[in-house]
Every structure is written in C-alpha cells, then in structure tokens.
Length: 274
Length: 252
Image 1 (spheres, rainbow over the protein chains, first blue to last red):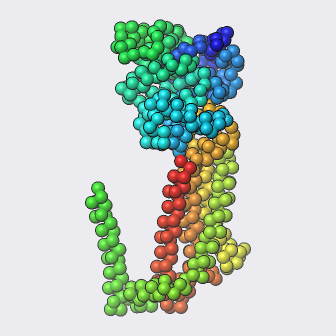
Image 2: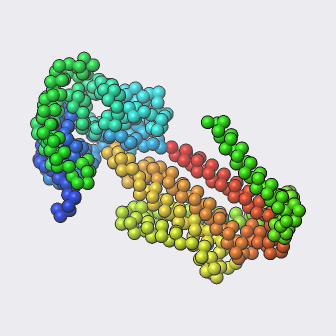
Image 3: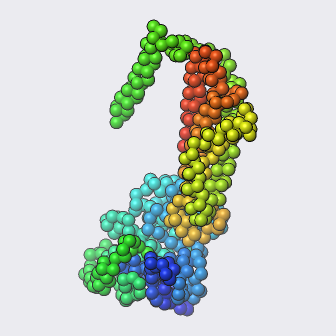
C-alpha cells in the first residue's frame, strides 16, 4: 500500500529556543530538510547539540517548529500522533510504578484499545523483544539493556507505522549495545516500519541504517546523506566487514570538522544537549 | 552483616538498661527526693495498674479523636492546596517559599490565640494539630507534583494521554511517594503538637492527665502516663510507617 510522496518530509525546518533578546537563545536547527521513504531506517548523526534530537521531537509532534514544515504521509504535523508514531527514548522513560507488561499496556489504554486485546498485544510485543518472562517485573529490577527492550516493546505494542528512537542505546555499554543492535536489525526487518533513529555512534548508525543523515554543528543543517545499501536483517559478519569499516570512516571524515567546531564554540554554560 | 546487626541491637539494649539502672540507683536510697523522681519500680507498678485497669481509655479517646480530626483536615487541605499550587510555575515560585517560611516559625506560638478562639477543649488542639500538620503535607504535595520527571510526561504525551489520563496514570503515581511521606510527617507532628498543647492548657487527654498528676505531686502516676504515651507514640509510628510502606507498594 504505497502512498505517493515520502513517508516523512521535513522542509527547511528551524527551531529556536529562547526569545530574540535572550542571551541564552539557541538556534538548534536552521533550515534542515530531510525526507524518509516508507519502510526505511534513517539514522540521524551529528555532534552534540546539533539538533538531531530536536528534529526527532519535531517529527513526532512533541514540539512545533519555529519555521518550516513537517509532514507525515503528506499531512502536516501539529501535535503528537499516537496512532501513527511511537517513541523510544534514551532512558528512564519507563514508568517505575508499573510492571513491564503494564508499561506496555498503558499506551494502548490511552488509545482506547480493548482490555482483552491489550494483554494479547503486550505478550506479543514482549515476546518479540525477548522479555516475555519479565512481564511481571518492575523496571527497577531490569538491567539497562532490558529496560530499553521493554521500551521498544511498549512502542511495538502500539502497532504504529512509524518508530522514532532517540539514542535508545546511549546509556548502555558497548557490548550490550552491539547485541541489541543485531536484535533490532532482525526485528525491524520483519516489522517493515519506517524508523528514524538518533545516535552518537558511527558504527551503530552504519550497522542499522539504510541511510545516514549527517548533521552540521549547531545551528544544525543536514550536511549530507549517505546510503548504506545492505539488506536487513544484518548479521554479525556485516559488523566486521570492510564495507562497514569504509562507511564508518567516511562518516568520521564528514563529522570530524563539525565535531571540532562544537569544541571551539562550546557554549559557556556547557549545556550542549538538544 | 547480620552478626554485626545483632551487636548493634545488643549495645542499644545495654544503653537502655544502663539508663534504667541509673534511674533505679538514683532513687534507691533516696538520693533524689521521690517527689521529683519516683522510683523506677513504683512507676512501672503504676504503669502496670494503668494498663490492667483500662482507666487510660477516656483520655486516650480524647487525644486520638483530636489527632484523627486534625490529621484529616490537614491532609485534605494540604493535598488539595498543594496540588493546585503545583499546577503552575508561577504559583510554585510564590507559595512554595512562603509555606516553607511559615513552617519554620514555631507555630505552637499560635496556641494561646487558638485557646481564645476555640476554647480549652478539643477545638484548640485540633486547630493547632491541623495547622502544624498542614505544612509538611502541603510542601511535600507541591514537591511531589512539581518534580515529576519530564521524561514520564513526554512519554505519556507521545502515547496520546488525555488530560485526565495524564493526571491519574502519570502525575498521581509519580508524585505519590513524596506525598505519602508528607502525610506521615504531618501525622507525627500533629500527634506531637496535640500532646504538647494538652499539657499547656486543656480539659482532658493524655497530656492533660500527665500534667494533672505532676501538679498533684503524684509523679509515679505521671510516669505511668508518660510510659503509656510513649507506647502509643511507638504504636502510631509503627502503624503509619506500615501504612506508608503498604501505600507505596499499592499503586505500583
């Protein structure tokens, strides 16, 4: 069921935080344009504070752009689209007072899914991420990697067409992150969702993405987009391939100057996060 | 570590035993006048008689009724006002320091005024208990709702929570542990201030009885009631802490 036009379109999007005369005014994004085609995994990568997370939040309707336009399926985004777009956040976005299964069910409850269906869908989603046995655990009882799997299950349970992931593995150690990446690649190959994935990790970006959008230093623009051109699911052998190494080096060359810029232009209060 | 724990408890028990022994020795040979400090054995004997006779009942009833009424008033007002204040950054910045400032005043100084307003009976104790308990409850309610992790709110928003769902499923359970701690603190300070003000000016209650026996030169009976008040305080503390632990587990 292909629809005309890109699945996600961001057109000259700018985002400014703070008033005109505010000394802490920050231009996070300055005319960023980017499309995502249906079913692809698009990675956003760039130096700290380049506005990649901001762009993700704008796409999901959690903020409204200061200028420019975001459209999903050709429709202008003006607020959250819970039936279409699900988020996976960096960490601590699970509700600690609810069990893993109840976390997964809550979003469905918000959307009026019938109670009996919620349980089925939650079980399915937890099985998909390999957490079926931990349905009755509380987030505090899970490791960092398991928490992020649970968050992913929560997003999958909503059965949205779009998945926006904001550095979901950033707080994890490298080994956990690589294994989760492999699982994610396999899982996503099956779901056929359109995914935008923000990351700091060059290897993660190349390993997961169909295309990688490289941001400039703040104010963020899209510097270039590179294609990975490798089928999903991706195996461990791709992780150690020359192709991945070459693309990773290419990304590093593209990013290097931008990262240098942020180190020179470090804002005085050191709050570079977007 | 449990071996060490046993040692801690043994030392604690030894400390209490040493206090009792000091008391016993100090009154044994009349070093201290029995009018000032009755013998430990006489006090314990009176305490035993008090427990056996059940004559504490009317005073206990008065004190507990005052405590219950004061606590309910403080809890309802504190939670409602605290929640309303937490709704906007403006009201938080205005009222949070204001309530914190008022709480640092020794509010028991209002007691003479409350006696004029509400009389010598239970009214003035309820008023002082409710006033003093209000502050920890309102401050914790504001803090609880104001500091809900923004990540929870963003996540709920992205999943399409309505205004009511946001309150009921996110804000309330997120704020709950802090609010319940405020309620426990409010309960304890209400009990302390009611007992205290009963000893200042009152018609009945445990504090009243203690002061009556002190004034009628019957210190052994006075100590019997002090022991009793300690027992009640201990039980109430235990009850409230258990309720708090239960409630914390409840909605999770």
